[in-house]
Structure formats: structure tokens, C-alpha cells
Image 1 (cartoon, helix red, strand yellow):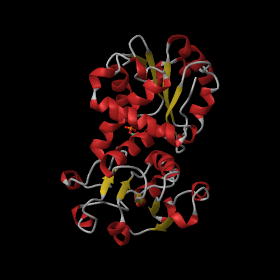
Image 2 (image 1 turned 30 degrees about the vertical axis):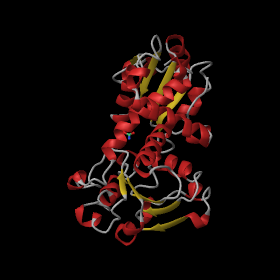
Image 3 (image 1 turned 90 degrees about the horizontal axis):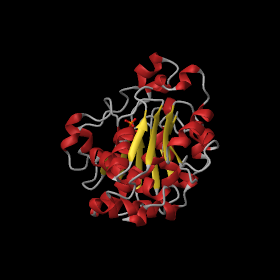
Image 4 (image 1 turned 135 degrees about the horizontal axis):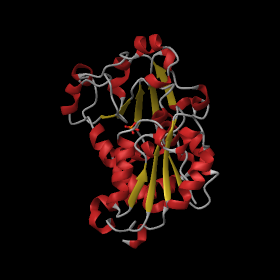
Length: 305
Ligand code: CP
């Protein structure tokens, strides 16, 4: 089977073709409503989720497929000491495709080695990668900005622990004419192993959102990742470092878009939600369509329409 563990597993033209299929599904959802009939998706969330889990499950159901999974990972035999490898070998006896989220980095890659035919999709592994959020983000950019090339992209917040950010930045850097403005407290800077993969001329780093907001085409906000901090005190000190509000939005371009993978805590004031430039709930909706496209591609059923 073909897996999606990190966005680098897919060529850019494959990513574009998933987005094209998502566009086709948005244009004709009825046409795709039975392409996964008879197929089962295993939904394995060992870490909390709202959007990723429900959008994957909604995606499979809207394609005519069905879902199995647990509401609490403590109800699976992993709680009796079973390895994740054995778990996946067992799940493969019953399902056609599996989605896994796990707090430990590398878990999705590890379990994919135990699946013979069944595609594995990484729904987030610790602070490492979140490739289907990247597909969601790219589809959103394509919808609101016409395509993914030639943008000034501000990435703001927890750049150290934010897995959605790591996956998105690595992927956007494969497009043409992308300039990044990394906005974070010094304690939460983009890790060196990601900066080292970028053209040094393609990014700048700053602690000040106010100084750069007027230059951005896209502002990608992110939550300070409480669950990855060793020190609660450090989290509390940094959690409200950036709060995007109406006043800050006054300095932004009229056609800038504000994105956020969600969940948000305080980093975007709710007063910004009514601003037409705020697209984070549209982004959550596109997440379902792009996951429909991904499932259909990985199961090879997109032409059954
Ligand atoms: N964006 C995202 O991954 O949200 P959830 O954690 O709610 O799935």
C-alpha cells in the first residue's frame, strides 16, 4: 500500500492532483458518494482531536464507506501491553485503510512497516508532522489565493512544537516564489533542522507581528502547544505572546488571509472571526474535502465515480 506519513512522501504534482480531485468532489459531491462503498476506514486516535478525526470520518462516510475505531485508546488492547505493530497487523485483517494519531514522533512511520496492503495515513505524530493538515492548508490557499506560488507567508506562534507548521513550511518551500516571515518568541523559534532545509534568502525571523503584518499575503497563526512543554510555568509565560485582534488587522493588506489549523485558544480574538479575511473555519471545511480526495486516491477508487 501507499502511505502518507509526511508530505515529502508525495511529489508536488501528486499533491496538486489530490487538490484537483478535492475541487471535483466539491463541485459534484453526489458523484463521489458511493466510490468507497464496501470499504472500511480504521480511525486510531491515541491523542485528542476534533477536526482531523471528524473530518476523516465524515470524509469516509460521504464517500459511501464505513468506519471502525475506538472512542478511548485505553479500550484497545494496547492498554494490556500489545505493541502498535501487532495492533496494525490485526487492524489490517479488518480494514482497507487506517488513520493514526499518536503523541510519539515517528509512530505513523513505524506502524506503516507492519501494514502489507493497507495504506496508513499520519494524522499527527507528536511535534513532528501533520501531512493532511498541510493538504488542508494548501487547498485553502489555492481556493482563496488562486494557487500556492508567489506568496509572502507569515507563520506566527509556536514554531518549535507546531507540527502543522513544520509540515506546511517544508511543503510550501517546494513551490515557486514563497517568502516566509517566521514570527515567534525566541524560545519558540523554528527548529534549525527545518531552517537548514530552506534557502536562507527565502525567510526572515522576527519577534514582532506588528512590524511585519502589513507585508504579508497569508498570516498562519498557531496555538502554543501546551502538551509539548516540559515546564507549565514556561507555557503560561508564552501562551498569550501574540493575540491577533481587530486593531492589528487594520495594518494588514485588504487581501491578506488569516489561517489557523485550530484549535485556537487566545491567539486570535473572536472579534476577528467576522473579518472576511479570516478563513480558518473555511479551512476546517476544506479539510474534509481534501481528505475525501486523499482516501479515494489511496484506495484507487476515484475513477469509480
Ligand atoms: N487541526 C487539527 O489537527 O485539529 P484537531 O487536533 O482538532 O484534529
